[in-house]
Length: 411
Image (tube, rainbow, N blue to C red; front, side, top):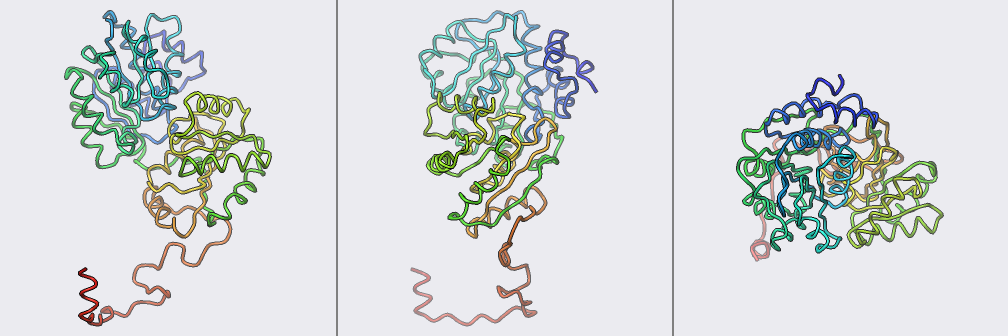
């Protein structure tokens, strides 16, 4: 199927042709006609399946056909994203479709001058892409108003929950007109998402092209059992096998990411790092150098788990397993994008086996092991003792506790 039957304007179809985009992805094929028809949409699809254009194309179509003038400080459409990198990526992607258009776009994120952002909003914006925290700062300053916002998009709403934006989202919801269209997109659907959906969406159509938590089929996944002390050497050996290919490495902490990037740099790898202790300028430069291939390895925390769309990323390494299973799906989704192949290798120590088991439950399958497997890495099977022998039927009798032991337990 091509984009033509979806109902988009010829100008947008021409832009798609210029970018060699001829066939819509499944989420685009289902969501675009519904959004063009004015329905609220809850779209669920794994990372790398084209969600940005699934909500961006119908949004731009409506804005370009509207005759409403943009009033000072007013915003006609709003896209909220959880991280600076993702917000910038969305803004840059959609701007490509507005070349030569009268539409005015503004990006507001933390780490940049809030005064400069206030100035840009003085004339109003047809399209505003923002992170929730910075948008709230501008609203409290009176630099922007949502009174005229007719279109709202929540992208990666589940991560906004993880990052603690739920209270900010509630405040923003109260400032939006009730008569608006809302599109919510995510790769996973935790239970708390129902609260957001009820607050923002009206009679939504649910579009689910893949089950929440499903990983891309073309990602070759594996796990290596190695403790922390042995991981730098294990990672170096793996990276050394493909120095000419792009590799993204995830660490759990900011300091850990910085230490690891310096260690890899000392070994001759072209490496950069992005994490919360880096300025936005430093993060942007590292990401652009990685995108162009100047850097071959990028070490990052979860700030990059959903903010990187670089088709040439061939390898993803989880130097530390995420303690939230959903984040595993988003991390490895940075590879095998746009139908390409990818590889994801995770390091796991004994203290992280509980995280590995949670990830395998989420994705619905075991992750193949490379190298040695520790004895019973997943713990004893149900119905067996710690030594692997079957439990006696009827269970073992419990010995009565002494009074002194009972008092200690009560204390």
